[in-house]
Image 1 (cartoon, each protein chain N blue to C red):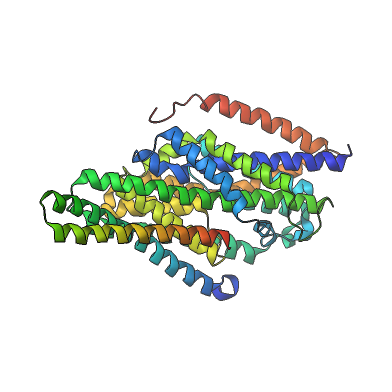
Image 2: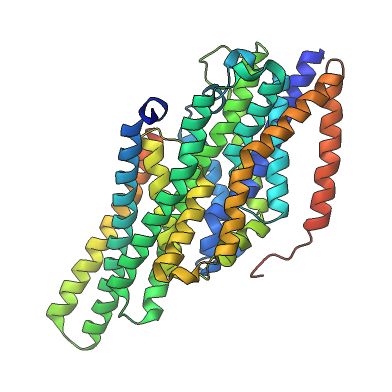
Length: 363
Length: 79
């Protein structure tokens, strides 16, 4: 095996680890509301979300390589740049998971790649307009839009069913959450598994194993779908708890409104080609559904911590990605990526060993 | 300046479509739940006209919600 093939293998493995953390981290987006309103038992909810995430990855095969192409110069992208960017994204995903904060995996990936490209090829290789248009402006609009939609939806919902007996109404909305949660899981699988497929395809193109514009091979699609589904099934319970119970104490109507708002915003943006973060959308929908009932029902301190994590995601992942590139560049050939992977695996094992003993909520 | 960086047309379409779909789906599903709840009540009281009206409301609400979900899946598959 040549050094280039070894680096490519490490990039593919790292991309799949990122995909796993993406599923693991974003499980909360899909299942937190269903679990907290008892629409579904926790393990059934994550199993259902994992199956639909897997199916969603096969729905559309439009490669999302543009996630990086719009923000950095494609000519500056090498397998080592991608590797360092992925390490930045994985590290930030694990840090936010450790603290139970729902942050955007997409922004972490973009931040990581921007940081490593900046260090590898200089400021000219980073497209400021692309970052503003594809990341920063959508990051401002997405949660506000979901907040407004979720808030208006819950007000209308209470207006329609507010005078009915709570038992049948709660049962009805719990039933509705199974469908709205399923739609969210499918949308998540379609959007997020595409990113990993895009990153692996980008690495295959950069290493000359795939032609520009060619569809990714079947093994890329199957492995990306499997990694995100496995991550989702593993369940990031700390973030599920934050999203499901720490922002607001949710009733089934609020859960349905939040999921409905989230699905509507994600699908509308997907249809019109406007990139949004699923995490920010769902969190915005949850806050809106809480504030629509009573403004003080939202724990604004927790919401503030979440927004802080959103603000920090891009610069933090970029810094980690840039530093990772510097470190890998110190060593000749594949030695840098091999050493970084070994250290990364040890840190991940340490973090999991400290936190994995957390009991599953509701069990 | 903003228009050169962001596709403002796509942005406005996204905002309007998300608002209509999100609020609309919750509204029709709420009407379906209202229909089911009032149908059961009217049925217990033997008010056949009321129960028929609320059954129709429940059915229409459920059909509209199902249509919204199918439309969502179509949007995903055709992007």
